[in-house]
Length: 252
Image 1: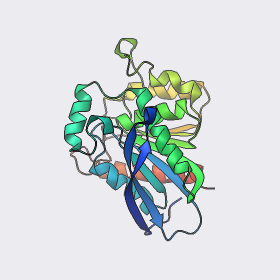
Image 2: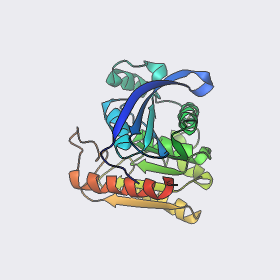
Image 3: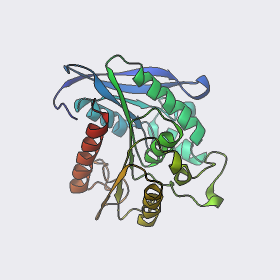
């Protein structure tokens, strides 16, 4: 579902995140669209709540979706330089999965409360955000479609689990509550093709509604037009897969 070349309005809003902590979210809303539109929650990547994710949020609004991207790193530096904040987060071993779920639940609830939303909400993330989107769709029942773009550490060895990441996401698969889209580069090592195979085997075994697409000649972050990782042909096809997937599952 896409309504191309519409206007939009953008703003920051404040959410009550995990344990009531205020966090900021960037919102882009299409204008000039008749009727209600689907909502999309974007879960940002390890580089942080950055320009790429602001652009990605606007891209969804441009396509006719009401989009929100919340700052998972608010507690580690608010709206300071995203590179500095992300470096601090990495040095601290990332954020806790439970905190991410609490913050993301606030973004989903905010979207669901908007009168312009049609009641259908998708969630999407890249890199660590893909992993986080998958965890959310397994732990919560309030999203209608999930897109995991090259999310690493879905398959985790027991010795890598810790207080912040106590359960491997692949072990949550039985609780996946909505259709799943996965996009992966075959040159990636996090996740590796072997890990993607493991994930797919688990989804298939449990009878989940999913579609995985894998791209030769692409590695990690192949959508990132601002980096050498970018692969134009694979990225354009991947975006078409995203539009088709959300159009199928979020239209009312």
